[in-house]
Figure 1 (spheres, rainbow, N blue to C red):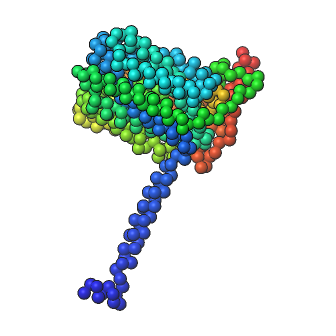
Figure 2: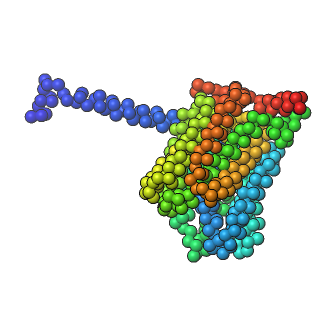
Length: 464
């Protein structure tokens, strides 16, 4: 009977479903359009470099979370000695950074990166042979030397092979690759490492060494990038870089960002465990949520910041970080362990959103301020500002935790907000061409930061 009615004079019910079908099609097309809009539109060379970055971060996740455990629990070194060995890496990297930047400028970022990867592969392949503390100190110093060359050359090469108008997307992709690789690597390593079985740690170190070798092989797919010859009669050393007062002010702000922001992620587990009674599993979940938010939100937020004021985005970042620390403060002040776990999880997610704003903003700004022939040095000093923050932040945070644990988080929030306000004041001194993140509505004109830096230096000498 229904067939006869549908075949007769009565209207067919099929058209009733057509608008719904169109709606589904429209929504599908909207999703596809949205996903296409997230395409960072980067050259193949950048994708090849970031593939190496994922592999490298995967290996780092295998080793760095468990290095202290290996030295103390497996090799039996005292806690203080193990801590000094781990700290040797950071200290040597800080000292070697300036030489690494100069090497990248003189011999090329790609060659410097390749040499650093070879050193890192060698050092971590030898870590299973550590039997005495001096073995650990020597290898940690070698790792620090290599890291001091790795980061300036890596960032300089990324800037060299990425069009200026897409650098923010390149550095955002680097954040995604780092968090994805480190998170997956750390999770898998946690399933492998057993303190009672030293052979499991040997496997971790050999996998890490292999990832450095794999990254080195992938460099074959990456060009050296365009380099600019030093103009005749112009200085090429750190004197010219240090004459750029705007750049130095930006580095000072970054020290505050890292000290009161990123570095307090190292004190958070101790506070969460001892003051809010969050379990180890809960603490691990906080960092998992943090990494997942970055992986999922980085590219959409990168699209959001295009065409917007860079210092305003960094200011918003500090507001988000301050909000996260206020939540942690509240968790320690009022809440039970279960409620505190939930609140700190939310804080970790909010902090990650702030990280997503910083990723495509700050490092791209530094790359835009740097002339090609000095980019390695600019990146070296930028890396040093991170190192200083990572050294100062946990040290100061530990002192405050020891005296008054709850005071740490309002203090860190206040420093974050003050640094954000300082960034807004610095904005007027930035060259107009670099104040906004490039996007469809804003394509920056070329800027000559070296000339401006030299001019500032001459003005300062004339007034001195």
